[in-house]
Image 1 (cartoon, rainbow over the protein chains, first blue to last red):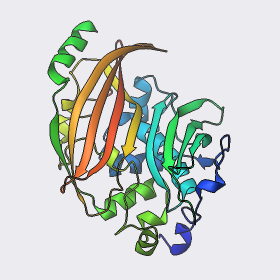
Image 2 (cartoon, rainbow over the protein chains, first blue to last red; image 1 turned 180 degrees about the horizontal axis):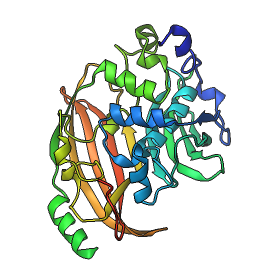
Image 3 (cartoon, rainbow over the protein chains, first blue to last red; image 1 turned 180 degrees about the vertical axis):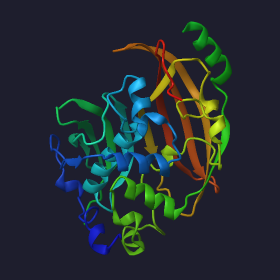
Image 4 (tube, rainbow over the protein chains, first blue to last red; image 1 turned 90 degrees about the horizontal axis):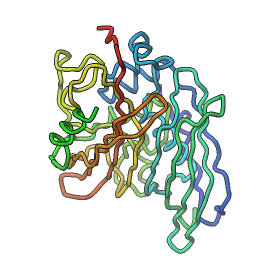
Length: 151
Length: 172
């Protein structure tokens, strides 16, 4: 059941443009996708691609197991960004490429480093990445977002 | 591989079409968020959404970009390829398999629950790249989402990577 308490897990605090500087690292987000998570993600997006839920089939395509969906990696990166920018921040763009495969029970750590701040337009640019427990890159790219001037 | 590429380009490149994504259903948008354990109040709590300046609940930012085909009840299972993907997405070549390669998303405006969404979809590039397991076909699609009032919502460039597996057993 989703309660008001559970909703406080993300999106409560508000970051402002004056909190930001180049080189700053965003708080990491750690995700451990499970087989159930992969199944529910495929179901809710009406995605019947067997590599995400059928282990023998995934192995037949030379994958190490059922694969975390490419767009789920993107969803994790966006979750990390959304938590940081807060409810009054706004995502402008994201670009990421999938560089490595992930399977259920991998520990995926999403991170970001700020590379440019435009204080006049309140826009921030950052490098983004997602690594597994072996520190291999699963996804990397760049994101741009807007932050308000005040809380 | 070259014959596959030529046929694919001939059939798919530069042919924009309109797809009906349909109404963004609050329940399914929230299920998407719950599926990945992202309990952002803006997706669930009207007061939180209003406090942030939104007229209603928003959908998670890349929920809409997972909806890249016309939203219909089908296709029925008999119309799927052996790997479970849609038959209309690629040439039917034995051993040709696919995985996602990345996305580039521009967020023009939040997507609100209850909005009706349309999109222009177009295959914009079909090329090749050398991967760790050999040559891959790289297909880039652009999907430009807007609501039924014509307001631009999201622009997506989605990359899919295809490769040929010799003597692939479909396990069907």
